[in-house]
Length: 68
Length: 362
Image (cartoon, rainbow over all chains, first blue to last red; front, side):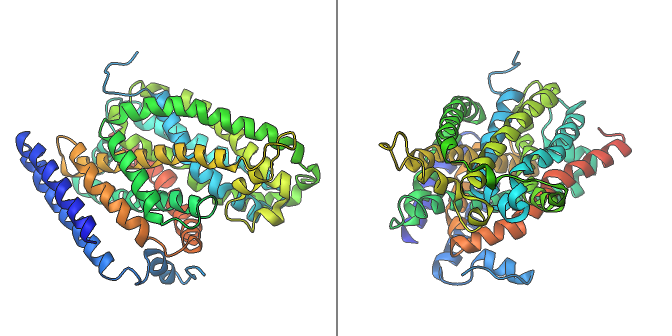
């Protein structure tokens, strides 16, 4: 998880620099929001990767078995 | 003649679509054709092509008077800003799921065929890094690369078909009677979900020129797809029979494993898996471009390139979260992806066309 967070920070710095130099304010706001959501998802998943998968949750909702 | 160097032709868009769907076609098509169509499963593409042809006509009608638009623009034009945004968010969610599925399928392919003891992240990081680098250059570079790789892949695919011919057993494919019509219908339902991907390509329709030729190139693509799908099903069901194929997870690779050239060259499945990388590279690149294009339209952004990195990182994480193993992934694909793809690929474009015509917007 630490590696991934470092990658996210490095990529964000590069992208934000480009967006600021291009004076794209709206793009910057949307970018930051999406990147924060992705980071939150990364923390959620890697804090307990053994929890139920997306398929398992969705398949159980429709009353089907996930897998072996 | 192209009006801009920043745009691709409709022909290139159709090639992107063919490569985009071919990966799923090789992975799941023989399995579903054998499971539902039984002995006559190899005839599935002959039936599956009709909804696809209908879709080509629907798309042609959608873009008839909107040649510079993309599908998001047409959705906004038809439903207005609020309803249009809701529909686009649904498409966005679905394409995010599709991206995760494609990335995971790519890794599973290697894990279940050539390199079972390698960590999954090795495959996903390698592919996503390549896709991220290539996609930054834009759709034009991806389309030109796809055009070349399409020829390479088609040549490999055809050669492998030719060298599989000695292993065919005609008894595995015949007889086909009128009793096979119902199983064929079931098998068609399971496979047309994959064919609906054509709709998604038009989310970057503003970067596609000469859209008046959607019908022409779409139908040419249909001929290619029918022939290719027939070849895949004949190659798999024809060699081992439907009862074996329906129990395998990678039937195509399994068939190629059994090929021997002049009893000296064997184990050529590595060539197949390597050529499969071409398909996955294009499929994931196209999905990434579709996603960034949808986000750009929803938020009315000026440029979509900055969105590539968050979406790529999301794909990496979600490819692990989507399923714990291959069986879950295959269940998800057959039980959820196929019906959802039919809705997003076939039903929604038809609704957009009907509503647009009624409201006089298209």
